[in-house]
Length: 382
Image 1 (spheres, rainbow, N blue to C red):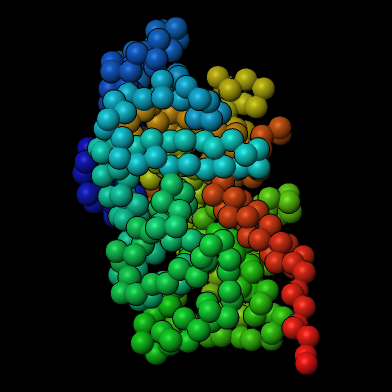
Image 2: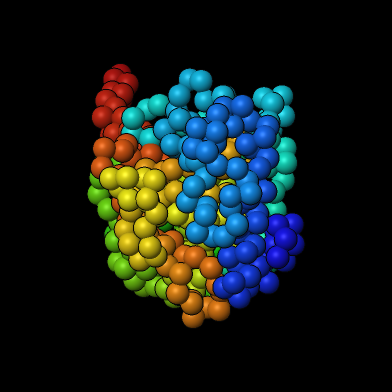
């Protein structure tokens, strides 16, 4: 399938025969590579040093030769050199600050922004089938955090919903307000909960402590993005998470869906009902040897995740991440083809960084400040 056809018809794009999928993603990435190698002086120098040209990428196995941008480059003060598009064409500037405190900055030009919004909207329809209902967003709004990639991705869901509410304001979360919103929508709309795992977990802890059990709607989903490790290093158990959602919210595990992505890439892998994260057919994930990232590992082997994305016209969307995981190329029972990806951990020595980590760290700091405030003395009588 041609690149534009895949964006316009995701149902067919995610179900191509294996040979067709390989040809489609190779052609899309070859075209993206050719544009950046021609128009981006910085990237062209990397390509010339590696001795690669667009015509070298005839098959999927050739994509390993595409020069990658280490994700840490987006934290550098001269990160503007990565740009293929002029800075005057930049429409969005997305930031993420990890535990190290230095923001990663990824700039999207107009064409990239249009493509990404089209892709994410299409994937939400393809994987979650949502076309109405109400969304309880356990995250700040885009008005409060316009630069946060996770919030931008969640915000696209609003176009598919009849009503929504953001219940994190000024980095404070009130579970009673969240329950009030869910109660207000009961018997009127299908209720969905959207947010990073740690904030969904806070809602679940409140329900558990107060011994409250809810029964949301047959079509309700819990949709998460932002990682399963807290800024403290503590991991969140997915199995326990799913079990508590079923117990306290009445939503079956099949409707609990996680996503994987990073702000520097436009690739967003969404889970099907089998809990496999499907890489969109306009992207390719290459697993690299930890000791030598020029070496690509076979499917099923664990290594460093490299993301190759054909959506990006603003800068080369060929990113060597600091995430560790593996890809699976076996058929999925859901009927979709191509790759699925599993994230395992951060690379040793890499800071823990994502939008959700930043939100959680700030919320915790606010709560600590509130707990430590000295109450004002009551005025003396008489």
